[in-house]
Amino acid sequence: MKLATYRDGSRDGQLVVVSRDLASAHYASGIATRLQQVLDDWNFLSPQLQDLSETLNHGKARHAFAFDPAACMAPLPRAYQWADGSAYLNHVELVRKARKAEMPESFYTDPLMYQGGSDDFLGPREPIVCASESWGIDFESEIAVVTGDVTMGVAPDAAIDGVRLLMLANDVSLRHLIPTELAKGFGFLQSKPATAFSPVAVTPDELGAAWRGGRVYLTLTSAWNGKTVGRCEAGPEMSFHFGQLIAHLAKTRNVRAGSIIGSGTVSNKDWSHGYSCIAEQRAIETIEGGAPVTEFMRVGDVICIEMLGADGQSVFGAIEQVVASAASAPPGG
Image (cartoon, rainbow, N blue to C red):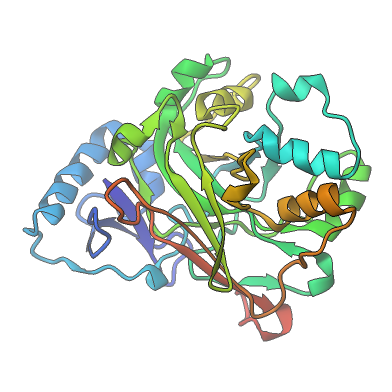
C-alpha cells in the first residue's frame, strides 16, 4: 500500500491512503489519523489500511478524491529519529579522492552514519529555504526506510524485517559549512537543514521483485532545472543494504517505530549515469581537470527527484523543490 500525509494545519497532518497509480486517495481517519499511530500499532492497523488500499485500487472507495502531491507534508512530518548513512561507497571514494584523502579500511566494513534533525521535515513541494547562496546549496537524492521496533543488537539480515515503509529523500547539504563543522570533531549540524521526503511512503511489497536483499533495484532520477543530471541505479552498488544500516544504528540501543534511516547519496562507478548530488560532479571535475566547474544551487533553482517502477509509473511520486531565500520565505516556512 501507499500512504501519504495531507496538510491540515496541525503538526502531524492527516493520514491518507493513495492508489497504486497515485491518481486517487482516501482519508484513513476511520482507521488512523496519523502515520505514527499506524507504526506504533502496525500489526493491528496496517491490515485495515491494506483493505482500504485494495478497495481504492479497484475503484470502489466511495469517498475517494484526486491525489494532490502539493497538499502533502512529509509522510512522517516529524519522527523519533532520522539517521542517514552513506551506503554507496563510490560516493565516499570520489569525494575523498578529489581532496587527495585516503579511504580508511574501516569504511568498507563499518557504515558511515550521522544523526540528523527529525523535528521539522519538508513536504515534497516545500522550498529549500537558505539565508545565503554562499553556503553551497546542494541536493542529495536518496532512498529512506521507516522502521518498526527493532531490538538492540539485531543481526543485519533480521533487521530487514523491521522495514515498514520506503520513501525518497532530498537530504540537502550546505557544502561550504561542512568543513568547519567536521573540523570540530562532532559532525554535521548547521550544514544539514531540513530534509524533504517523497509524497508517498510505500510498503516493500509495492516494489515487487525490485525490493530484495534490503536494496531497491530501480533507477533514481535527479533533474536540476529541468535537465536530467542523474539516472543512478540504486541496487547493485549499494555497499551496505538497509538491514546493515539498521543493525549499525541498533548496535547499542533499541530502535523504535517511526525511525527513519537514509541510504546516503545514490552513486554509480560508471560516471555516464550522472550524479545524485552536485558535490560528486564537482569531485569528478576535480579528479579529471584539477578544479570543479559546476556551481552549487542558487535561488530559483528547482530539483526534481523521482523513481519509476518496472511498469514506468512513479513509485513514490516526485520531490520537486525550489530554492528560496530566507527573506522571501513565509513565516514558519
